[in-house]
Every structure is written in structure tokens, then in C-alpha cells.
Length: 171
Image 1 (cartoon, rainbow, N blue to C red):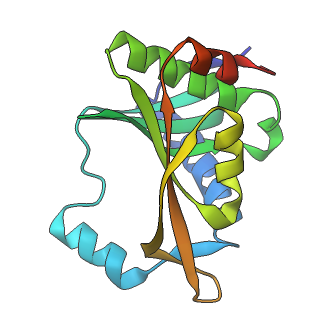
Image 2 (cartoon, rainbow, N blue to C red):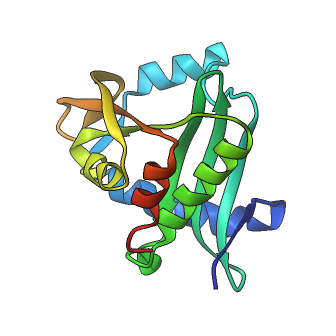
Image 3 (cartoon, rainbow, N blue to C red):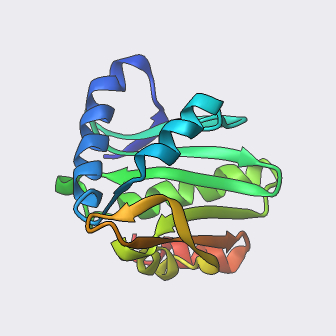
């Protein structure tokens, strides 16, 4: 049985391990541009989000998923979405997305947004869940492991009854 709940201090180790595993997977494809990311941290711009919540997917005390929901003025941003390798293809991602949808609708928010890197293949996963591409730009924050440009894809999911149907398919 899976339960989505607010992350607490005792989740730190399990959540860190999950994020390390997820980061290991994506670092085979792209990596941060050190100068850009360190300058953002110095300016205090990185990680500053209003009304953000870290959530985890818990199964008998094991952290199998993690994501952050950030309330923005025009939508709900999902970021740092991760599912443990051993738990993939079990509907956990769709469960997290349904949770975000229910939360957004309860708050009167009309859309969910994600920004992902095109080269990971993740845009296809989000499209299967009803997201549409709204922007693609060459990333200023990341490059491929070969030092070539990678592309940030902004995608949005409008919240309606149709969106709920597309999320809950195959759960």
C-alpha cells in the first residue's frame, strides 16, 4: 500500500538516497553548468519558492517516490519528481500526479506545470498523462555530458474532467 504524505525529518535518509539514485540516472545524460548554478545560489535565486511542499510516497516506511509542489501565481509547478528504480511501472508516478491534481483543484489552481530536459525522454511520459508542450528552450543551466546544449521543455496540464481521466488511466 502506497501513501503520499508530507516529508518529515525522519525521511531525510530515504529521500536523499532516492534523489541520489534519480540524479545518477540523469547525470548520464546531462549535468549542471557549474558557473550558472553557483551564481544562482549566491544570488539567493535557486530554491526560493513560495508555498512549496516536499512530498514522499511511503510504502511501509520505505520512500519509493518524492516530489515537490510549488504554488505559483498561475499554476502548480511539480519539480524534482523521482520514483525509485525498484518501484517503477507500478503506477506511483500517476498516483503522485493525481495527488497534485487534487491538491491544485482544491486550491482553485487551473493547471499543473513541469519543466524537464528533452534528452531524458521524460516529455513523452508527461505527454502520455495529458501534458502539452508550451515552450522549448536551450538550457542555460544544463549541458549534455559531452558539453553540448540540452533543451528544457515546459509542459502544462489543464485541470478538467478530461485531464483526470488521462491521469488515472492504467493506474
